[in-house]
Length: 472
Image: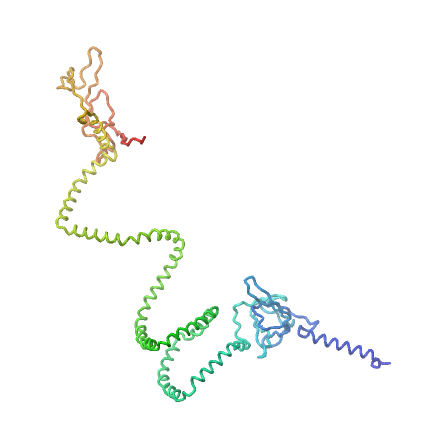
């Protein structure tokens, strides 16, 4: 018997073929079994509608599928997705600088992963990873465009159409007049547009700048929405006083003329201000550390500034009195004589100053003078004095000397009496031109020698100090 004549065997083979076909169909979205693949993991900020089984294309050709999609959360609270791509092993490995984008396959929402091969020499190994930056330029997909027209937007557009239709209804003649009056506008628009498109206007940078401004304003969109609501209230109030608004608009051309004339003149001032603040950047940074010292100064200076007007009034009176004094014709000759007197006294004072500052002689003199007047009775004080009694010796100082001052030797005792003359009428006081010493009161007594004037050597500047007695 042949195999085809066995119905059980034919049925078993048929069932096995059906099972294999169902298995292959079920796993078709995850790749055919037993086919080698090249795996690449891609970290993207947003899976953007991708599902497992979506195609992966390079240059429009299908080279693999998205096998798996896993979402994750970062430490900063942001989210992302990791794609596991299964690429045909027949394709070369991707360079490390390859770019990944999620693109729409049709307007129905189907997506695919587009890979643009890089030019780097280093390749991504199997199981390697590519990370797409969060700020990468991905463009605008068609589904994003349609998603822009959500229900609130559609309701707003419908309201605008109704309002515009109502506004234009029955105003055909006015529109005809407006169109006819567009001719002067077009005539003047041509040179204006030429200026606008000139290279020095940098018109090509306008829209990128607007895009940047829009991206900066996007986080505060809700605040801007409230702003327009408040503007509606403001313009509603202006509509209640149309005359004031007309007067304001009437003054606008004059204000623009003034601005056109004055603003170019302020360009230099703005440039200087920019340079000034650029130079003040570092001082402002150091102001933070100096503020700890400035705050107490401001706290102490505030009360002083409050009473400064009274001080200023007194200063004005003082300056007026000083002006009157200076204007007096007698003052100038008096100041001149005072200057001459000071010039005459200057050498004397300079010569006599060390007598007190170095040698303390004036204080000693007045202290001793006070002691000299210390004797008193019921009537008052009197100067102490001792009488000089004439001696019996021929060489006594009480009268004319009969012999030399030192005298002859004593015949009875065969000793020499030390009666040599010692006198210093003009001692050194550390004055300019003199030896820096305090001679008076510090002279050494030279025995058996007559000394008149300063003794040899420097006696130093150590003198008796006059200090008040400590309190008891």
